[in-house]
Amino acid sequence: ITKIGVLTSGGDAPGMNAAIRGVTRYAIEQGLSVTGIIRGYEGLLSHEIMPLDRRDVGGIIHRGGTMLRTARCLEFMEEKTQKEAAAYIRENDIDALVVIGGDGSMRGAQALSKQGIPTIVIPGTIDNDMDGTEYTIGFDTTVNTVLQCVNRIRDTAYSHDRVAVIEVMGRHAGFIALHAGLAAGAEAVLVPEHDVSLEDLCMHLNESHRMGKMSSIVIVAEGAMKGSDVYDYIKEHTYLEPNLTVLGYVQRGGSPTARDAIMASLFSEKAIDCLLSGTYNCVIGQIGETIAATPYTEAPRYHFPLDENMYRLVHQLGR
Ligand code: ATP
Picture 1 (tube, protein in one colour):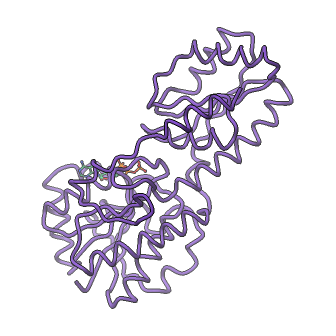
Picture 2: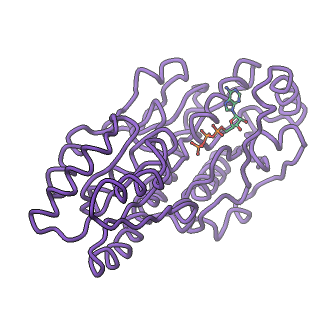
Picture 3: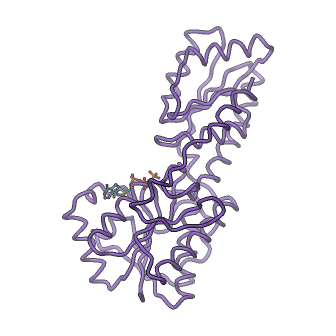
């Protein structure tokens, strides 16, 4: 191969820029040329591409978001559109495509590979919910951002004897809620992987209150239920005073942590090494201590669920 394309797709995540930089510079180092595709799969349809050299990706490693922009391109679900995108890639002599994104983006990459385009995926999503990897770029930054926010909210919860209900992102996964919850010393976390009983939650909060705990933190993953429903239930069924914060998009932005910038760089190196050695149609990922490349079709065998021990521990320590 002589020329690769790179795009970011799905939700933006801190560390995507570090991955664009890593892919571009490492590829150039190996003698390849690099084309950036703007707005994910949409850019392949609207023909928005730009050559990337070393300098184009300077000054971005510490920036959140993605310099290539990103999109959720629903048209790309259709085979006709995938064929059109594949033809455009060929017209531009792009031999392989690096896709930085989440699980939906991986399905898009797989669809392109079925059209004969070699693709490789670098996991980039704050949700940490992809098969084939224990870690996705952006997760650590988001957990740390949530932690900082919770620590601020805790000041008010403590001062006013409140139950702070905090809704966090994570789509259908509870990783952000669980990790931030353990780090912040939350009283309870509500995650989609576990049945949520608001009755049990209120019993737990009342019990803690009787034991002398005047304020509590409850972290709710958006995939489990709405923070406002938890707030309403506590207000109706206890004498405790809840307050509600829906963190929203503050969780997605910001400079990547060291871990995210490092993982982005290591995943990028692995992706380019794979393409150069003829390994493609794979997702790059951290599996145990190694950085692996797993074929899309085998990725579901490497599905890493929520850590049950952590889940138990949050509730044991939070009383
Ligand atoms: P995040 O986890 O941050 O939301 P994601 O990559 O999972 O990221 P999605 O919106 O699910 O985000 O997917 C991104 C894009 O990937 C979609 O907008 C679409 O263009 C493409 N895509 C998703 N699923 C498929 C599919 N089954 N076939 C083809 N393309 C797909």
